[in-house]
Length: 135
Image (tube, rainbow, N blue to C red):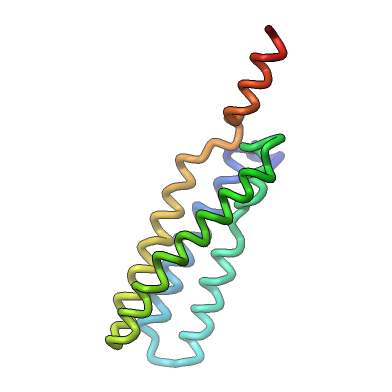
């Protein structure tokens, strides 16, 4: 991050790794070789895990990191709550290709969402604390 700064440094990895995760999913679903499909699924998982979610969270939330971490985990669990019935329905109808394509689309959208994240912007509570100390 020192080389590119906090904002760019925290964005570079997810802007590359999340679209790569989507591409890996698309390659896995199109693979004729099961070993290649497993390798692409493993690559997808690795790309998802590379993103600096927690580092960006700590920069944005500051003193409220614990609360923000709860919100981050709740968001991740809510995504699972929504996705599991959809995947169960698709897999029950042997529609794995649409399930993987949907996952790839969400990976691309998640990568694009990192363009909206500004880890240098102080959180609301940080701004409130600064104002109250100045009063």
